[in-house]
Image (cartoon, rainbow, N blue to C red):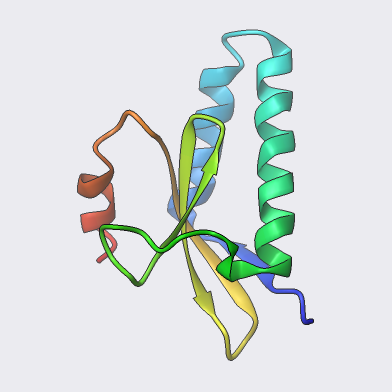
Length: 102
C-alpha cells in the first residue's frame, strides 16, 4: 500500500503553534504527550487515510481525535496527499471553524 504525504495548511500550522504554547504552561510532559499522540495519529493516517470517520459537519472532511483535540483533514487520492486543515480543542465551536473551510 502507498503511504500518503501529510501536508499542513497555514491554519493547521498556526493551530499547532498555539497548542504547543498553551500546553507548555503546564508540565513539559503534557507537550510531549500531545506530540507523541499527534505523530502516532499522523502515521496511522499516512498509512490508512480512511481510518478516521467522516465529519458530521461535511463529508468532505475526516476527523481524527488527538487527546482533547480534533484534527480535520481531506484526502487527495490521485496524488496520495492528506491535507490537514485545522486542529481544534474539542470544547470549541467546531462548526464555526469548519464553516470557514466549507
